[in-house]
Length: 435
Image 1: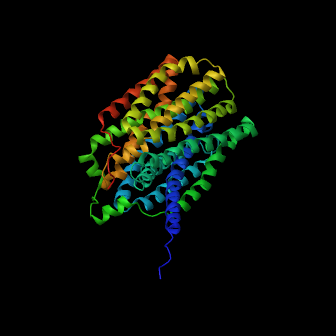
Image 2: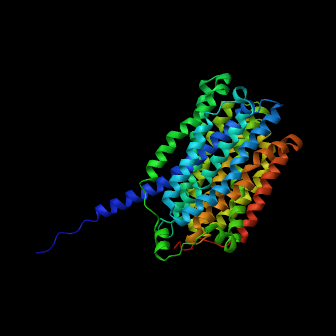
Image 3: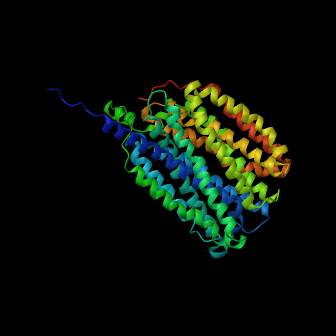
């Protein structure tokens, strides 16, 4: 008597559910990361200066606000060293939970800090402390999310799996920008400046709770479990990284510069410039950014698929060269003050951000062995943030004031050349095995 056939539907369904959970857990953290960061970036462009630095001219207020914006980028490599140590020593899962908690608490508390008119100079001090804490948490977020996706990816699809953390910026941007857009439509300028800008910070607590719930249900990655079994963990991952893998760390950071510069010049600086100098309404410019970021979301899976098909380097080189050329379009498009041309500029820049950012989810983890991968990927990513994002709005504000938009466009082109050097010097990593 023959035995009944064994159904494979149950195991297959279980594997599909685990894969979906992993993908969502890697995506949700970076979505919250960019939501939190762009909430602050938008507030810095619109209200942080008058609320926390009310003395001085409008330009001085904007520069002070952009300085606080840069503080978190200085903190992020520190966070990547800290969380990277534990991510490479005790595991990806628990470290990702801790980094998300630190990030979420800091962001939410910013929404409750009184302004300068209420508590004087203590207000900007508290703001800077929480902004630093936000950067510490964010420093441990991206590397772990990228590893969660790529270390669970099947052969030949690491770029595609690594794309899901890279979709986080588009969704986080749309969520934060959409919320600010709604507030701009429903509140007066006085209401928005008084309390409305705080709402997106406080809403972050809900998103973080969702992210924690998902991440507590995932398992450790196969690559890290294998490293434990082979007893390959190192005592101080950052020491090993700096002693043996400083060159790929530096190249990874240089490759990231163009992504950050494209994003924060085309959003934070352009928003500030568009409202203050081109006299667009706040809600009008936020609406144009919402349209443009859809093109960034469309470019992300396209670029990730191409990086699996053709390799990481060819896709990045094409995207970076296009970004270099886009710098020359800033003055004629953004400077025109024409809504269709400004919209075109924003679409071009954010589309190219998606093209250059998508392969990084696989590329940076592929540069490092398992025992320092969390630290290495995170440090490269966040050092790139210091070089490409922390000072970008500040420098762009100075360049625009002294030389006009052509100088800001030149800054974008120079950032592209920096990344091109980094990509040309690194090896192709598409066929690297993550063991």
